Length: 243
Image 1 (cartoon, one colour):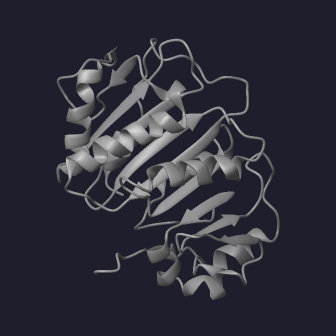
Image 2 (spheres, rainbow, N blue to C red; image 1 turned 90 degrees about the horizontal axis):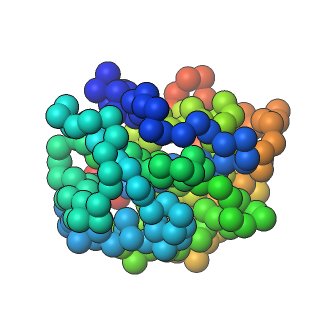
């Protein structure tokens, strides 16, 4: 990852952004292949809000825009511009968040060969795996994610905000892979040999349930990573089916 990408992944320090809550906070990282249709991205952004209405922002930090203030009031008139940025080939990053509830935030990044949605949210279901599956299902009609990762946002697992389609360095507590990603790593039959629960999904994808996001790693985690070819510092690198 180059310095520009790292800078876009780090929010600016600002006294208008509240400190992290003491409650359980779920981090969900969505990774998408590029899609040139801004209308589909507009629908995807609206899908995220349907999944969790409390993600509706009050402020925006336009991280990649040199002329932007640290945080500015959000306007719904900005949704089409954000969708255009997702569809554009140029890199950009915006962080959307509340001015009084630190549990909810959405960062949208357009990188060279993928689009990222980084979500911070309080869990809404007893099983965080159900939160992930509900979000993936909500996005299915707009821009389906190729990967979805979920973890405790306040733990060391927050390192997964730096991972993506071109470099998955480990297996997060919860990992969704779409049908193309499943095929690229050997198919569902191979994945069911992993040292964790693997759910085969109706869309051809799979959900790895390595552990609860609130639990510490176990000695079985390395075996799960090896099932995906992640070993000895070698990450998983995904390719599109048309590449």
